[in-house]
Structure formats: C-alpha cells, structure tokens
Length: 141
Picture 1 (cartoon, rainbow, N blue to C red):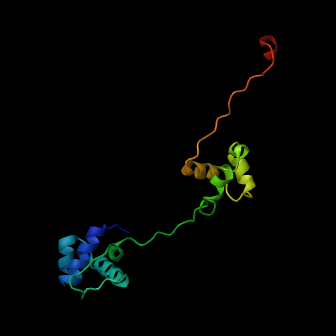
Picture 2: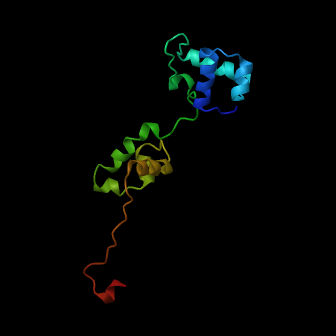
C-alpha cells in the first residue's frame, strides 16, 4: 500500500466533495487512481466529515492514518512497578535488573527492566571502591 500524506488526502476530499470534480479530473490533478480517491472519501465520511456544512471543515481525524496494530509492549504493566522497586531504600538501589525481574515474578526479562529504568531517568550506581581498613600496607596485598 502506498502512503499518501495528510495534505494530499485533504486535497482529494476538497476536490471530490466540495468542488465536485469527477475521478478522472482528480487523477489528472493529483495522480491518484479512482479507487484510492474513493477510499479516501469513504473513510472521511465514516469519520464524520460533513460535505454539506458551510464553511466546509476538514479535520485531521477525517484524513489521518488509522491506528496501527501490533504486538503489545511488555513494559505497559510494569512502567510504574519497576522504578518504584528501585526507590524503596538504599539496598534496593543496589539490586541488579535480574533481581528486580525475579522480584516481579520474572514477568519481564532483565533487559526490559533496564529499558524501563533508563526511560525513567534512573542512573547507574557504581559501587565505591573499598579498601581493607585497619591493615598495614604490608598486609593489604
């Protein structure tokens, strides 16, 4: 299926329903075939376009793309739970994404946990280097 931008669809709608040109004239002006013109017009009428209204008003909803279907995101149900899990206390901030995933019942993989945390704006915590306190230099090694 060829994509036609919103301006072209609005132009077709204006030419067909307001100027009342036939499909051959519209094809000569826009390059769109009669079937495409008829599809654009029928979708606009289904979406509430009123060709008898004066002044004619073409809204974005009359000529916009239909919503795309696809696989639902795994993140949808956990976008609030994952950052909240990290903000509980100091020790939860040190959890790995695998630990957080396990706490949530392995409903989402650790990589998805990382993506959610990155999108929430959390920063990676780097552990502070610790030394062996109380030992002499000779015993530290």
